[in-house]
Length: 322
Ligand code: NDP
Image (cartoon, rainbow, N blue to C red):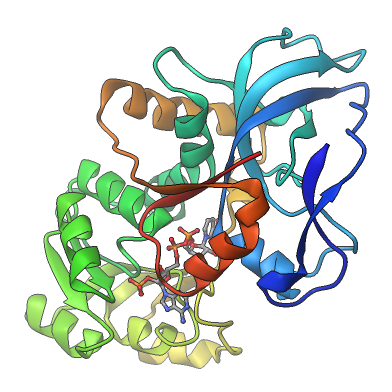
């Protein structure tokens, strides 16, 4: 089968389009013929080695497709089922052998493209507003990179919780998309001082939660945007990793909380995975949640996809088609 393989870490050029053997499903695994692959920022951290993986590896954690074969104990699925998943390595490929406990069946009306676009970023936004913090009606939240893949779903889900949403973005086009997703206020953080703007927009009170996936260039000011006992949710490092933080800083800034969550810990059991996936896919099915698919590229163009994502040139989801 065709797949992207990384033999050494580095820039987009280390993504090699190769012929590799089709994986054999283990007893509890399902062989999925992939129709659409979800591109995620974490794929770039794996490629550069920021999050180290054993070499060589096939990148990618998210896809949707059709069940092609079953391991001897994989009795929950049938050949031909349309399934999707997040968190299964080796997804930049025509086939993947996925543990059956990570798979969900796509409901009627949700196709493979929507499934591959929804699972990782959708379930991330779900746990961020329901579980990392329980965002409540009337809370004010700050969401960085509000027109990104996670950003656009996070804005919508924070609005579903009844929050007032302040979003940051780098361009006017992104500002319009974030507003379209429901953001009440937008700050162009590449031109305006977002800390000063948040203070102005909240009459100096600050926000209850900052969702910060940008990291290096934003984390410090993000902390200063919080009201006492607020939450800094650092969940990514698009601009680079955050340095160590002195706990005394958290007390000086008003007994604030700092957390660094990952999706894997918020979908640790089959029950929790299904609860989040059912909500997200159900909202797509009924139109309560909109997905923005920015573009769809052939898998052989994975290098270009990574360049666009790291160059801040995408809005919403990018899909790769094997
Ligand atoms: P995005 O589509 O959000 O792309 C990243 C965005 O970050 C860019 O479009 C850009 O928006 C912004 N950004 C700010 N500074 C930089 C920079 N120096 N270089 C590149 N981008 C920058 O990606 P995803 O939706 O895939 O992921 C968003 C973040 O969420 C990532 O950090 C990812 O790791 C994290 N994440 C974390 C998860 C978890 O469970 N912890 C799960 C899923 C994602 P703008 O131009 O508007 O500034």
